[in-house]
Length: 338
Image (cartoon, rainbow, N blue to C red):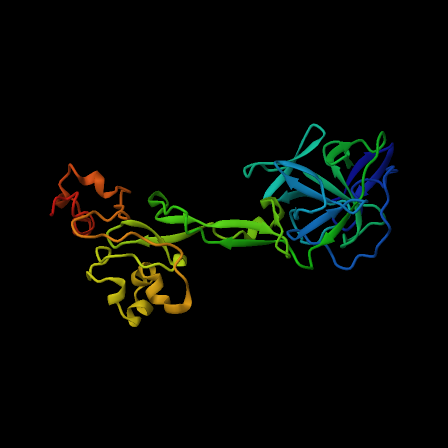
């Protein structure tokens, strides 16, 4: 359905057939050289916006500024995936939509809907293609985005300068997520016995960036599972540690890791999780050394299903708990068994 918009005293029709939403306006701007587009820009795909001096729009600390490192923006609209000059879209950076606060552009919270912007090609109408220079206009008052210093501002094009940005597709090497285990981390029983991983955003050559510079739709999982015994004890060991849990209290068979055989490693998930070094052989190096329970002592690594260490049971009846078989093997001293 076509609509009519007043602009500078003239009327202009618009529709979804590629006509512009507003008249071509005399915007005093820094012009980009005309470059023929090489591919159609589609809604839902990530792009970067390059300014006239070769810098890029960048999301950081809840604001949009200009930087040598460009953030990835996703253009979102209802209907077809193809984008045309004159389309109204929302812009998302790091999974959060951009919003307007006075004359500034901010990265909203995950719950915010975000504000809409009009994509206006600098030259011509029709499909939006990569390497097209476009204006980004607020749908509220048709102010245009403009770079001032390192900040992005909204300015009335008739009274000030708008700014055309080149739309760049992400066809080459992209920033990437890197995940590294943290053997010094803490396996948290309140997180269903998981431990936080070290997740970082880097360039293809390994330079570390801010999280906003990577695609959050494909961010890897930030936690790895730790060993959880059949009775629910959460132990500070994950498979990535390549470490054997000492002793035998942690399994119903009463075996140490060394007493289990190769078939157990292949078919028993509990054994694989508890006996990283034994099950991997020479395939990995232990990342940590765990203390060994000796004689009539409590196992210092034991934590019950309620995250209680052995010392918590000193004044309690260990046999009254559902996990008593495991508890009394791991906490011999506190349970007064010797």
